[in-house]
Amino acid sequence: MARTYFCPRCLDTVGVEHVLYRTRNGEPADKPREEYDRGFREWVQAVWQGDPEPIHRIHPQRRAERDHHGIHAQCGRGHRIPLRAFDVPSMVVGLVGEPSSGKTVYLGTLLEQLDRGRLLPYLDFHLDERSQKIRAEVFHDFYTSGAVPFPTSAYQGDAGREAITETAVAGDTEKFYLSFFDASGEQNSVEDQGRTNKFLYISDVVMHFITPEALTLPRRSLNRRDDQRQAWFMTNQWIQTAIRSGEPKRAHAAVIVTKSDDIAAGALDILEDAREDLNYSGELSLLRAVQVIEEDSRYIRDFLRSLDGGLPLSIRFEEAYRSVSYHLVSATGEPADPQTRSFRNRRPQRVLDPLLAALVHTGVLDAQKGLQVLR
Ligand SMILES: Nc1nc2c(ncn2[C@@H]2O[C@H](COP(=O)(O)OP(=O)(O)OP(=O)(O)O)[C@@H](O)[C@H]2O)c(=O)[nH]1
Ligand SMILES: [Mg+2]
Ligand SMILES: [Zn+2]
Image 1 (cartoon, rainbow, N blue to C red):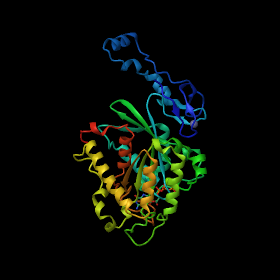
Image 2: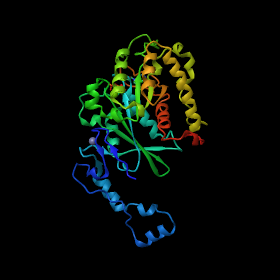
Image 3: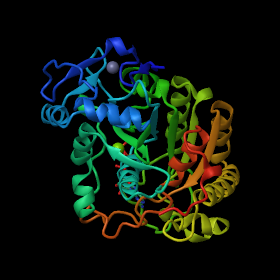
Image 4: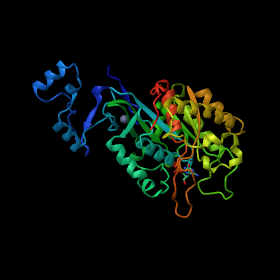
């Protein structure tokens, strides 16, 4: 049965009949035809063997044409929608938190980890063409030379408000889409949410970024850097407007305490293990990884609740959201060098955890079946 699709940018409900097809240059196009288009003999053979797959295989000429012209689907207002949005579930993941809390650096690192096939053999991920382009615009210098990405601007054109969409594939079937929206930290009022962060109203997963600075945790080094300018009241305001705008009762909140490398070691004694990256290339199965993440989530929750600033935030999350997980993450393992504004030696720690927990909590990934060793 065909699903309907909620456009995460304009919130229109899109049915199959409303979809527009456009070329890469925006010219109207026909819906790409997907019927089998070879010889009669092959068709009969496919039916005879009881394997319908070749029947649905698209003719190579059609595929080449589709790729040449970049034919894709759009909602009635011209927002791109995933090609098979009516057959495959589509999840919206929003990243929110104050300016410089590390959302963009985290997202760039997470996409990199998905590229590296960290969840194989269960899921692999690939980006659609448009998403590859947006990613290159935002992260090219970050990937090539470790340069700190530009602040996500509130005044950026429409492109900045688009999603980066990953397709999750198991074997050769598409399982679900993940559309990541990276908010600008400056846009934290309810008015901003209603105007530019509409994705929040239908997010399935909200990643809330909280910095050690906002929690006034002891710093690793004494000098305060530029990017350490968060304050508790701003963090709290972001959380409250996001909860108010969203539909948290149906969503999972991944609470991400970022820049864990910034916290003085002594302050986090009990969490020493929770800082180290999980050993994905070792003997770790999906099931075990999820168990470790959940266990650490409980530690981090307790830790947060032991702090004056952390307790009310944690209560707010848990009263609002359907499920909540807590994570201690460092996207880079180190602060950027203030002179060169770049990271010299990136060592991501626990970056995949929030996504993994979210996939399990929203039910698109079944950890109980995950007994094979992760790559
Ligand atoms: N120490 C440390 N610094 C980080 C980490 N991640 C990001 N930063 C620093 O935090 C600053 C802001 O990072 P961004 O990812 O651009 O922050 P943002 O939340 O996207 O900010 P806006 O786009 O302005 O909302 C940068 O100067 C980074 O150097 C981390 O894991 N550790
Ligand atoms: Mg940003
Ligand atoms: Zn739309």
